[in-house]
Amino acid sequence: MKVVINADACTGQGRCFGIAPELFDFDDLGNGVVKGDGTVTTELVEKARLAEANCPEHAISIEE
Amino acid sequence: MSHTKPLVEDFATDFDHADPQWVSNPYPIWEDLRTRCPVAHTDRYGGAWFPATHELVSRVAKDTENFTSRSVVMSNLRPTDEDLPAPIGIAPPITSDPPFHAIARRLVLPAFSPGVVNALEPQIRALCNRLLDDMGDAAVVNGGTQFAQYIPVGVIQQMLGFPLEDIEMFLQIVIDVLDSIDSSAEERQATADKNRAYFEKQIQDHVDNPRDDFTTYLLNAEIAGGKLELDHVIGTMVLTLVAGIDTTWSAISSSLWHLAQNPDDLARLVNEPELMDVAVEEFLRFYAPVTMARLVAKDHDFNGCPMKKDDWVLLGFPAANRDPEVFEDADKFIIDRRENRHVAFGLGIHRCAGSNLARLELKVAIQEFIKRYPTFTLENPSEVTFSPGQVRGARNLPIRVK
Ligand code: HEM
Ligand code: SF4
Image 1 (tube, chains in turn cyan, orange):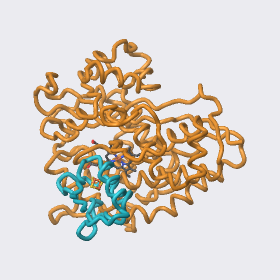
Image 2: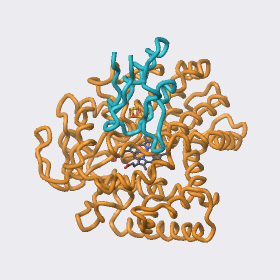
Image 3: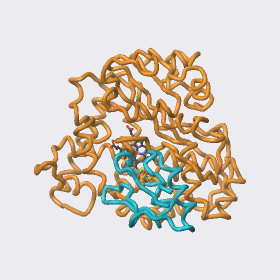
Image 4: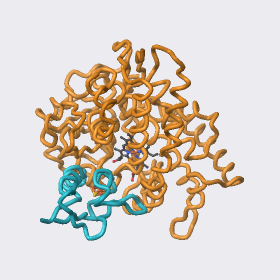
């Protein structure tokens, strides 16, 4: 499982790195970025789903 | 003010966000509009529309072709194309349209990035504690006028590097711009001139004594190799005052208003501090303080409504946050709501640049208040007042703390 951010849709609402700092980080402008290659380990599945469910811009997707 | 205008009888055809009923409790009105309209209209303010659903609010926020941000505060003064220097607008980036918007926004974003903002946490905590100390051991305190309003004022004053003594003046500038939606062109101009003179004085002081703050940052910033025009610098300063103070103050005071009336939620926050992050998002959803406005950029049909160039559109992010299509039990405050795609900070290219700062202020303010006062109640519910206009929050908020 992997998390992906659609950079065109992300406006830096900052929910993802608030909820799952293990998976997401922010750049200089405050936009969300995926850490590493976005692989979600078992213990982070719940957090990944929550990040996806809270992004107001629908910019996060989860690839199974 | 609003009491000189006729009271609204039907919000679907004659809405007014300054009507006493809307000011005191807009939520049932929005619910009714969502099922009946869902786009309300009024001839007031020279003609305006109000989409009440999440879907339509999102559509307006993301459509910068058909809607312009040239003016984002709806008033009786309808700006014309000549009045406002498009595409910059009076307070970039909030009043800017593409393509200039991206340039103006890029310029301010680094100053508000999570890394920069998170470093302010100890300062904000100290500020909250000073305010709490100042209340002494009074049994009744004012959560609005003694606490909430001074937090963002103190933060912005420090950010801009303006003198501490000017705090009361800051507050007045904010109130002048936002709460005086019914004042005349002359009154507005007089206030604008006074405020401009003040900003020019502060800017001169920063030119003479550069220091590590947002004002110096703006003075040094460059667009395409050139320094910013004075109008751009002043506009962006005014924006941080107007966008950063009233908004955050409202979010803090409405959250305290909620806790003062909901002892179970208060007890949970006190006993389960790890809930704070999700609670903050629910406060932001449920009591979203900021409604924006747009002007229609060109005649077009919007969801069956014949929108004309220069009609106003009131952009109700708070109404979108109560849409049952998007939120389960939308009209219930659920302190541990885990899935909460709220739009309190807007959507699309104008998403609140200060959202990281606002969240931090809200979180720290509530944390420190409930640490000092683990139980509190509303002292006199009928004395609580809410602000009129596009930024909604509790203003007078008497709270019994012991
Ligand atoms: C709880 C507090 C706050 C709320 C609810 C809020 C809400 C909003 C909303 C809804 C917008 C979108 C405007 C639009 O679509 O036209 C916005 C824009 C903006 N806000 Fe905030 N805001 C808050 C606090 C702050 C703070 C603390 C600052 C900075 C000190 C700030 C700075 C800005 C700026 C610069 C913009 C314009 C961004 C752009 O146009 O690109 N806001 N805010
Ligand atoms: S929550 Fe969504 S919009 Fe916000 S930073 Fe993350 S991906 Fe971007």
